Image (cartoon, rainbow, N blue to C red):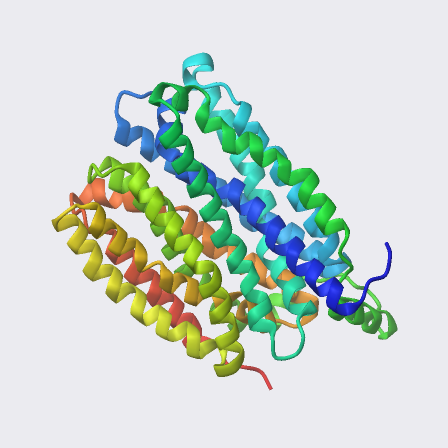
Length: 426
C-alpha cells in the first residue's frame, strides 16, 4: 500500500471506521425498525402481540452470538491487528444481512422461515460482536494526544448515523409504498441494499494501515523475553477486574437506553398506544441526526473535563426525565408527547460521546480490543438485545404500561455502580 502522511491516514481511519461501522450497524438495527412487519411475515399472524414478542425474542437471541464474536475477533485483533479483524467482520455482516433480504416467509415454508431468520441473525450477531472494541481501539490509537475522546466519539456518531439511515429508509418506504407492496417486497429493500457493505467496507478498511500504538506494542513484545504476541483471557480477568466491571456497567446502561428508545419504543407506540409508526420513526430520525454533532461535542468536552464529568451527569439525568415523560405519554398518548419522550434520547448522544474513549483507554494495548469487545457484548446481550423482549413481556404480564421506566432506572443504576467501582491506574 502506498505510504500516506500521518494526518491523511488519520482521516482515512476515521472515514473507514465511521462509514464502515455505520453501514454495519445499519444492517443490525434495521431488523428492529421493521420488527412489526417481520413478526407478521415470519410467525403465525393470529395474534399481533405474540408475533411481535416472537420477533423480539429472535432479535434478542441473536445477541447471544455477540460475546462469542467479541471474544474471537477481540483476541484476533489484539494478537494480529485491528485492521485484519475489521475487514473480516464487515464481510460477514454483509452475508448475514443479504440472507434476511431473500428469506422465504412463514406462508411459503412454515416453521423453516423463523429458523432461517434466526440463523441469519446469529451470523449478524457474531460479526457485530467484535466491531465496537476493534473499531474503537483503531480510532483512539490513531488519535493525537488530548483528542482521544473526540476521535472515539466517531464510534457513537456511526451508530447514530445507522439509526438515522434506518429510520429514514423506514419513513420513505412507509410513505411511498402501499401496505400491500410494503408487506410483499418493500421491507426487504434495506436488507438487500445492506449487501453493499461488503465491497464498500472491505475497500475502505483495506486502505488503512495498522495503528502505530499496536505496531509499537508488537515491536516491544518481539523484543521482550516472552515474544509470544497472543493475548490470553487469563491476563484480562486476573489483571483488569475493575476495568471489566466498569465497562460492563456503562454498556448495560447505554444499550438499555439505546434499544428501549430506538427499537422497543417505536413498536410499542404503534402496537400498544395506537400511534402512527411513521411518527415514531420520524422522531427517532430527528434525534439520531441531532446526536451526530452532539456526540462529537461530548467527546471534545470529555477531553477537556474528563470522561467521568460527562458520563455521570448523563446517567443521573436520563432516568429522571424518562420517568416523567414516559408516564405523561401513557396517560395521554399523543405524537407530541411521544416526540418529547424521544427527545430525551439526546442525552444518549452526550453519554455516547465519552464512552468509546473511556471503554478502550482504560485497558492496555495488549488486551484492549478483547476487553472492550467482551464487556460491550455481554452488556449489550443482557441489557440491550433482550430489552425489547423484556419490556414487551413486562407490559404484557403486569398490565402496567409504564413498566419500561423501571428497566431504564435499573440499567442507569448499573452504569453508575460501574463508574463507582473503577479507579484509574497510576
